Length: 117
Image (cartoon, rainbow, N blue to C red; front, side, top):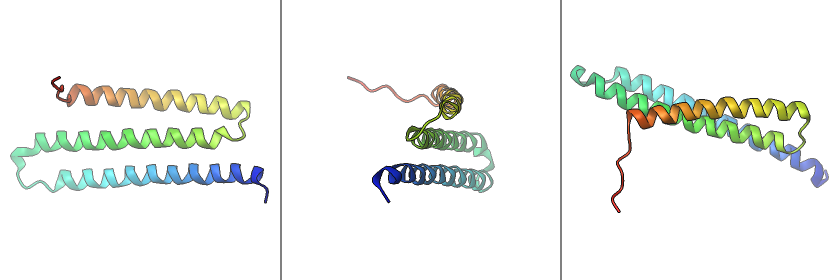
C-alpha cells in the first residue's frame, strides 16, 4: 500500500476515533448528570446541585462539539470535493454557533473570577 493511499485511510480512522471519543464524553456526562441529579442527599440543596450539574454538562457538550468539529475537518481535509466542503462549512457554522451560545450562557451563569494583576 502506497503512502498516498495510507493518508486518507489514517485520516478517516483518526476522525472516527475522535468522533467516538466525543460520543463517550457525551455519554459519560449524561450519566453523571442523571445520577447526580437523583443522588442528592439534601433536598434543600437542589438548586445549587442543579446549577452545578448543568454547568458540568454544558462544559462536556462544548468539549464534544469541539472534538466533533475537529474530526469533521480532519476527515474532509484529505480529499475534499465541493460537496464535502459545502457540508463542512454548514457543520462548522452550526457547531460554532452552538458552542458560542453555550459558552456565552456559561459565562453569564457562572462567571470566572478576574485575576488581579
